[in-house]
Amino acid sequence: MALTALQDANFEEKTKSGVSITDFWAEWCGPCKMQTPVLEALAEDDSLKNINFYKVDVEENKQVPADFGIRAIPTLVVMKDGQAVERLTGFHNKEQLSKILQKYA
Image 1 (cartoon, rainbow, N blue to C red):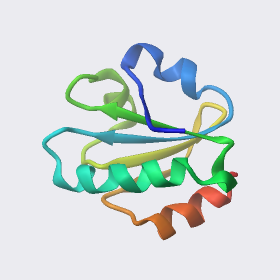
Image 2: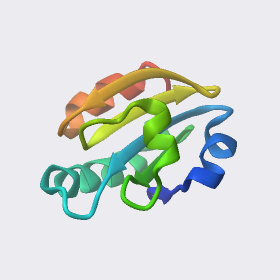
Image 3: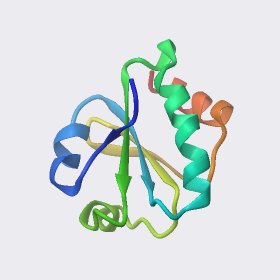
Image 4: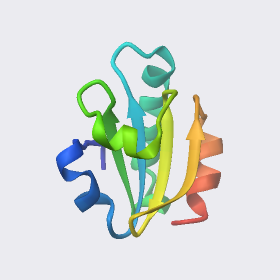
């Protein structure tokens, strides 16, 4: 499973059930470019197969980042059944994210 791009229009629908992690990012953001391959690798991890991996471009989508009060990127939001349960700002390596996501896998 790869990272699926979401927009303001479909974010709520896609994250309302189950567990997901969303990467709030922008094309010009250096740390965001480092974060993407880490998330892509985790999306391929069989032990995390019940977690959906999403990304939201904060330049193209303003409403959802505003709703979450995103002020710095990358910001990763882990959601369970439509509720944010974890929020991480800045770059996180594969081991850090894996440990956090295993709690919800």
